Length: 114
Image 1 (cartoon, rainbow, N blue to C red):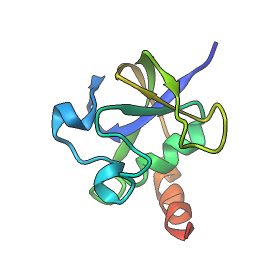
Image 2 (cartoon, one colour):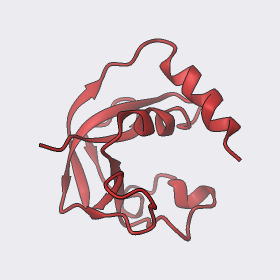
Image 3 (tube, one colour):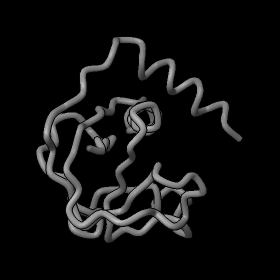
Image 4 (tube, helix red, strand yellow):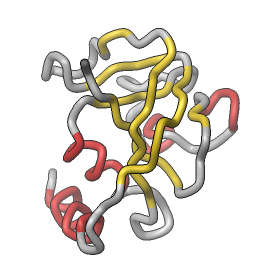
């Protein structure tokens, strides 16, 4: 069984695409060429999800959720097969507990990526 994760703001119960919610997405921050606003993105890698959660404004105030994506398909823009998937939406199964320093450490790593 594959486990999927999504990073987002604290307190979400359902993950809908930015085109529905009006929320900013990676496409809003320069990734429009590889990120669709009518899809949600999930990953099979917990560390990748933590990295994305560390970027949620303000100051990395994100959370990581275990999710069930609706109609997932492989993200063809990702060059690591099996890492990233796009879906119509996703149902939150649970919030993944993170160690207190996990987001702070991930934020340092993400900022160091050119």
